[in-house]
Image 1 (tube, rainbow, N blue to C red):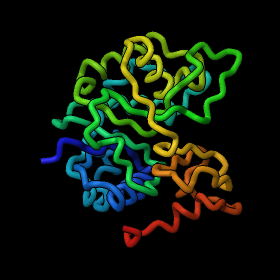
Image 2: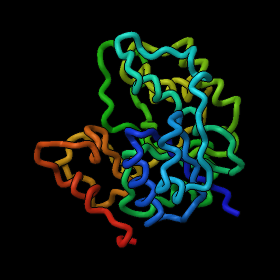
Image 3: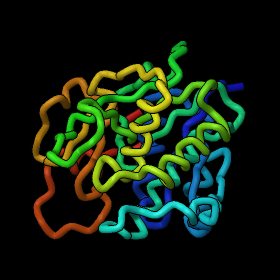
Image 4: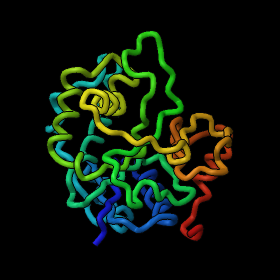
Length: 249
């Protein structure tokens, strides 16, 4: 029985991305049990998603009804980022690996699962730029790729994260979304964080920028999502996404 599971968060808007993320991971890494989380029952009913998962979990949005998104960003999408806290649930494994649904696996990523005892692994956010109004720390981790050890799994962590989101959400940007809350939690509770090298979460907003691609393991599309319709010319990194096939195993 596997001691590690792979966790994804999806909905109907991100379902195509989730499926591509899972297929690319399974093409290059061990075939861990997959837990798909969503507040969207229609997304969880997808036959293709079901074929890739061992468990599909419907999130009760009511559990997050007392958490308000940043007042100037009251979009439904912004509010739903807090559902990522569910990746810290105890699903019965020693380690949960979480991937955002806009991550493409280009090479194996053994540091996330190979005999690692660190409670939490994540890469620094190379796209982070401290603004004048920012009240956090100068170095922030990106929450798109996480490896979470047994000591941090369970209801206690989920409630700690939800409490920060309710009581100290911050003003905007890095302060207020799931990533800002996770970084506050790390610093507030003194969570031991092992920083992964950038190739484990290569953050790209310019899809014509191929720097770092030669060693990249996990490519993170942080601008427009590659599966969304787009009338303009696509960059080389988007071509990587669209050209991926299971035959690349």
